[in-house]
Length: 342
Image (cartoon, rainbow, N blue to C red):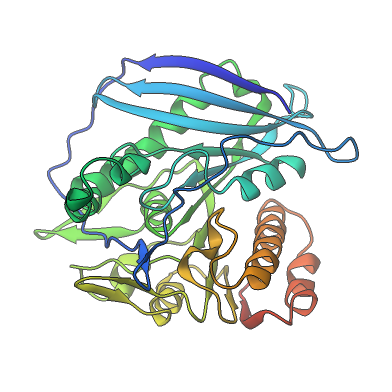
């Protein structure tokens, strides 16, 4: 594996949005930090028997918004202009960074999918630093409506720049999936068509380049009408991953595991799949290794990355047989599995 750094500054046009969307914090569970603040700083080189990949740290800045958009790209070595590869664009949970969820990025790249992990500077690891008494306020600021919108524009911007960069010829721009965990799942939902009403007007932040979405531990949209009115407009194929103990709990805010299923139920498109693991926690889907139970954590990570890969391959034309076999292969840890229309 080769790590590379590039720096680009964007001088494009800006978008003005007078409408704002409310999203929940969704990052503490059981009084413990559930964000991905402890991701490893280094990667191990793949074994010779694995498909190799390179890791690029890209330091981009959107000058139109005065906002840095750092990303990490896991790019399969086999990717070329003659063999462009599909792309996953990933949004982290609150307090995370581009280095998080590396078990997903590394695996997908080893299996032929480029994985672009976007860092949202308004809700990233920086909130953990500073006066500890100011942490609640920093968390509140990170969950404000303007940051929710900024996150979606981070995804748009990252896609724009990757597809205009020197790496663009190696990416199949017709095969792009959005993915995210927790707050990042909400970001992905907005990018694939969730429509929130504010002051009688509909905000539509959909990116038509994105053909499907992987939604891990997605909280509901609060301060809005019933979820069906928000999510009925999401018609791309979606994969929803959660657990029976996927609970979000902070002072003044609680979201039970049933909320993740409610998001699944409210999605408008028929090509939706739900996987619910037995037990676990909200944070076991990050790079943290102990949450949700040490043994279960590792098993869930393996099952999650395999399910996501089978889903993406099926979306882009492969057989659905791996999806149909998945729940049997992981039956010891799966509480519920719903395979929608293919």
